[in-house]
Image 1 (cartoon, rainbow, N blue to C red):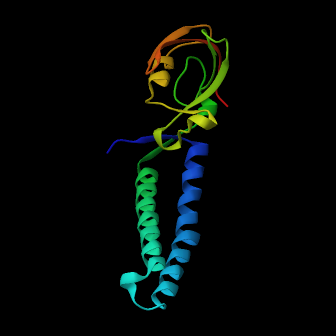
Image 2 (image 1 turned 90 degrees about the horizontal axis):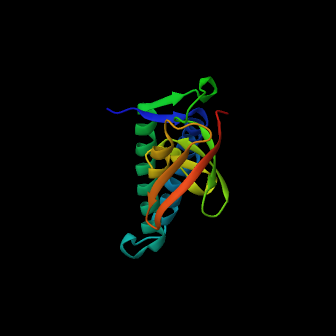
Image 3 (image 1 turned 60 degrees about the vertical axis):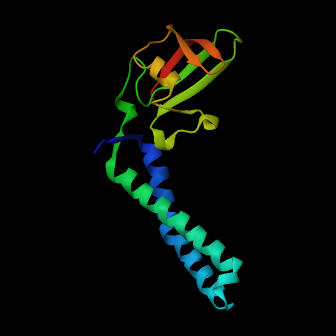
Length: 156
């Protein structure tokens, strides 16, 4: 199976989510199902059906997290330097708008564009990999081609 690259922080977040699901969410939904069963006829019991649906979601998420964690490869970014690679925090200048944007290139399971964590498989991350401070990159986006200049590359 293919390894899943994660930063140490990303691994810790996924592990914490898994522990919370197992120790807090799973017991709570089991309790909710038990309480809903006490209300009688299950065929018309909306609380019971909602709790079962939530249980299904929780169990699915637990299986997904266990699989990701089992295949994870935690990359120590503090030991990296140089050109842009996995784990790098990159400060970009949008050459059209002069806006500065900062992204950390992370694994698929820890990506969150609003938080500045860019999926390593995204078009922008793929364009940045291997480039260095001062380089310019062009990225094909749904809105057309965007040009960025790399202002800084950090590994923190």
